Amino acid sequence: MRTEIHSQQGLSLIETMIAMLVLTIGAIGMASVFLYGMQSAASAPNELVATQKAGEAIESVFAARDAHTITWAQLRNVSLGGIFLDGELPLKTAGSDGIVLTGDSGEIVETVKLPGVDQQLDTADDKTDSLASFTRQIAIADVTGSTSLRVITVTVTYPVGTVRRTYSITAYISAFA
Image 1 (cartoon, rainbow, N blue to C red):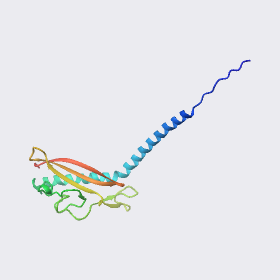
Image 2 (image 1 turned 45 degrees about the horizontal axis):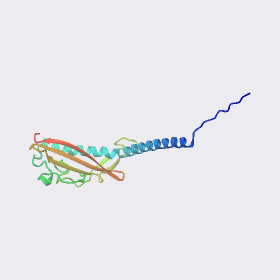
Image 3 (image 1 turned 30 degrees about the vertical axis):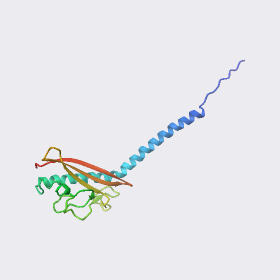
């Protein structure tokens, strides 16, 4: 009778360490994606408010031009002889002219009403948040080579945790309403 001995092969320690390294890198990658998703979800309400407030500012400029409450010459920043205040300023209510960031803007910081736990507006658990930590800037510049076309850039800066982010919207406006 003859007995043959077959050698058994298994995983070496090096192969095991390499497999653990690959799995660890994958787990860290998944954790970073999860963290990014959580940060995005947490910043979503402020991003929405920033988007709305920037759009509101653009719309108020167009509405004032269309209603002829301001002249084409007034549709500039104060530093260029217009009515729009220069620099980043708090989000305050519009003044009597209905336009934000002009000399007659209100003294009241804007607020936003958010749904409570039930995620429905106009119920008892709604909360009103101040937008005191938000700033808005309107920059109006002539388009090179044109006397009847200007570019409006509205930038809203808002908090996301310990950092500040910005949202900008740009539109072109002509002298013709």
